Amino acid sequence: MTTARTHLEAGDVSSPATVKVWDPLVRIFHWSLVGLFAFAFLTGDEMKGPHELAGYAIAGLVAFRIAWGLVGSRHARFSSFLYRPSTVAGFLGDTLRMKARRYLGHNPAGGLMVLALLAAIAAISVTGYMMTTDAFWGVGWVEQVHEASAFGALGLIALHIGGVIVASLEHDENLVRAMITGRKRAPAPGDIA
Image: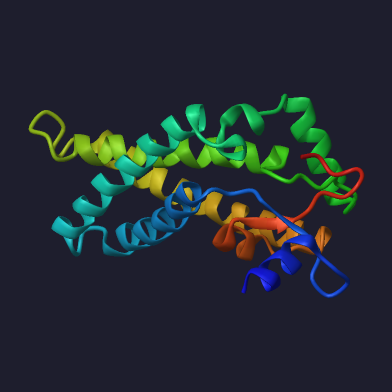
């Protein structure tokens, strides 16, 4: 078994070398958030108790991801994937031409998406909590912001999935598998680690 693993990591023609990118905590966070958001979105008003519990779990995940973005592993840290707006715009332009550089961690658009999703989900969590308090129960604007944030997050998720598909095709790389295994193809010349 050690020989096969060493062989896979070292790479050859049939199995290129891979490197660890996404730590287990990032992967657990990601897939837990996927499942909990889907559950919370689908239950809405129909299952108030489970919906609220999912919301609290999501809020905990967001708090964890913010902390992990400050002190976590290399590719989990915000400092590794926050770029200037001009860099993001240039990357998106290159992506439209299918000529964007490959990034080992989050690319500039992916980094921006992480921030946008965290902000949208934090807004959902805060307004969801507010709706459970005496001070804000039944207040129209809180419910409207909660619902708008949920649908906004759904739109961001659609963009995120589209970006994953485009980047996977553009760089001949299965990014979904990478978020499951934590490993990506080793960097080639011209890639950004």
